[in-house]
Length: 271
Image (tube, rainbow, N blue to C red):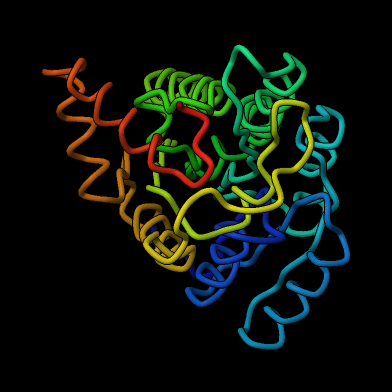
């Protein structure tokens, strides 16, 4: 897929991977519909994009936990551009608490954003993407292949997303629609500082060494390349690929490896 003049919707576009995707797609000539709750920030990003690149970009305020707002997002994209070529389900939130300590509302909120947000946007965009034989992207995680302790809601939401996208891919084998599951490793962004604690309040600081992670710009390039070549799955780090492979043959060993890695976090929840 040549991205020049394609119409791409990105959810969670106000920061992190979503923001970097907006700039990467614009660099490749795509027109953009940027969605997030932070409308002022979105407007600033769209203004920068259209001043920097010969593309069109619009901002749409959207909370992906609302089915009605997701429907409105798709209608706005069609009202402005008349078609949709790519939907990138990027909006996401994380959590950090042991399951025994966490309020269930925390898990529900994470599931509403990460899983149901993907389902809602995809449901309303799919009829249009079928017309253009376009692409649906889910920005998932290695946590959707292997559960991470202290992130029960996050891992559950990403497992659910992966399963949903897998079925969607099979259902559309003969329609020309591509379904891409993108799984970055740990990425430098605000997702950890915005992670919910056991009571649903923002954590406020990262529990990991952000300097050793992928940058959101690196992730954006990999995803954009994947969209162009109709990739099926992107597991973006050697560590991630090794973990997925080993989990198929020695899952018990991987359990211990994951436990030991998370136990080394700052203020680890694993005692």
